[in-house]
Length: 459
Image 1 (tube, helix red, strand yellow):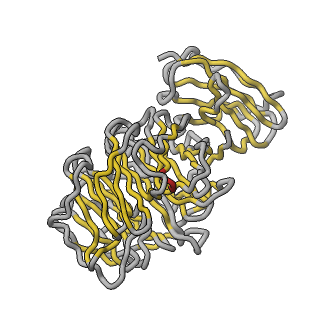
Image 2 (cartoon, helix red, strand yellow):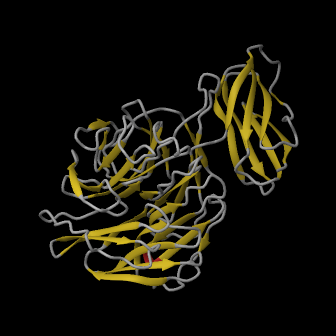
Image 3 (tube, helix red, strand yellow):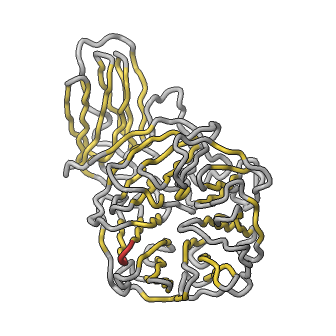
């Protein structure tokens, strides 16, 4: 399984189509030197153009739904370790799906089009069967988001001079546009997955320097002027009261990335190393319940890279390059569940799915600077353990050191250590809260040396 770790750095900026991840961060960085993020390519089983992903906001056994062209529907219920292809079941393969939205474990909605006709489908049995609940000529549905299991909104391109804006109050079964009149300005249109809903805020982006918004859960609508013409992705982050605070942000991304701390009155541009691609989305991270302190952000653009930035810096850095394909979307957890989500999933044009693990649940610290005579990996302690264990190891020479953890099938579970270390004695920790009981193996690889030991997780 391919993976790549990410260094903890900070930035908010860009000129591409990006997907972001906001995360509060409780680790004492002084005592821990390792990076805390890892990218893993998934086995989707398809080569179809994948267009949208939606996660459920859990910490453990995260559910993620993915849709794509040709009516393709994919689902995982175990953090992406396995994917089920649920295509068919009521969605014709002539429908090119553009967006998907998780509502509850059994209820999901997805929208797509055949030619100029848009369809919305809904499942209430975990994807086994899908029922058409909405259709419209023109006005392609671009994005769907739910505030809670009952209340949701979907937006599409304008029809007859009016934005296609719809609301559901019964888990996506029925959709109504009453009271949601927003006139089209000029020839403006929307973008796939360019919607965000959090607390009382609902936002969606356009190609007309406008971000349409509601600050009272869709009762009234207005717009803020975006400094970027194309708001291909938007994200709102506010405190748990639903009102702006000093730490509240609205991100707007087209070819650049901007943020605001005063709901759009002023914008600050962030920098991104690539300037010719549009942003495809933003995504919050772990500890989403700590709304007052967003600490870092992920972004995916419509190229083959994922970018990372941390709150407090002005630059994004390129952290991961996919082996093939172009990113269309990065899943966004809108949940305020304590602990937030551990993973986000980025989908690509070639059927590729990248899992972003933005909380590795581990750490490394140096125990002694004494020069060891050899590389060595000690037995973890405690063993058996639940849920945290520690692994001491000796580093003889300067160089790259990795400790990788595998399950009994040989599948990589975590990589607590992956960095350049100088000679000394170190201790790494692994928090296996998100993993099932069982036997695991951990392997030290450094400067041609390799050693593997066994450990047991008992819950």
